[in-house]
Length: 213
Image (tube, rainbow, N blue to C red; front, side):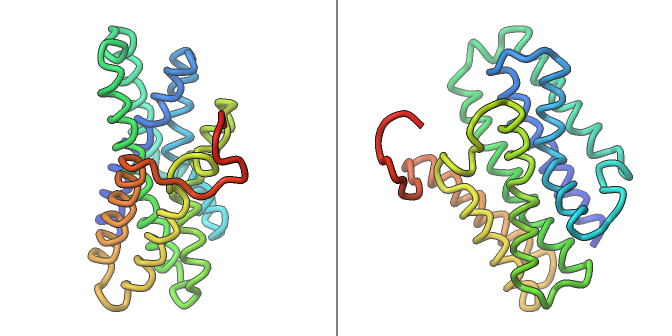
């Protein structure tokens, strides 16, 4: 269990760090700010999950590889921006941010549900779905709050709902498909939903359907 989840979480950490660092670059933050944005996006959801489960200290402090991965990914984005690569290919990096954020959301939703089940709460469907969702979206909420923007999950496309659906799938399939397949199904469902929602501009109904957010 630990090796498979570790591999998925490291991939998700790098992906989420890229999306966080990109926001820091757009906000014209310095190198420290960009690294912090990448770090909180990548590790914030897992930290919240561990706090809910009573796992202290959280994994990001016990296993420095998570923080190191996030900071390295953020530094690479900073160097790309410093050399003008991002500015020259803005549309490409917009797509990169979308894909990276969708990968991170899918992976951390799956790992959040999996770790909750392995912590002994597999019979509590609601709790597994809740912590799967918190793990997936928590870092993004912290990121957006620090950046002074409305949290992405409340204003853009199908985001938290994709995470909820993925966590439900993972928990439901766990006893039927096993750990690895359930996590892969969850990841693919969240990833596909996010990309389709972005492509077709699908969003939940709003009280004010038009005008600036």
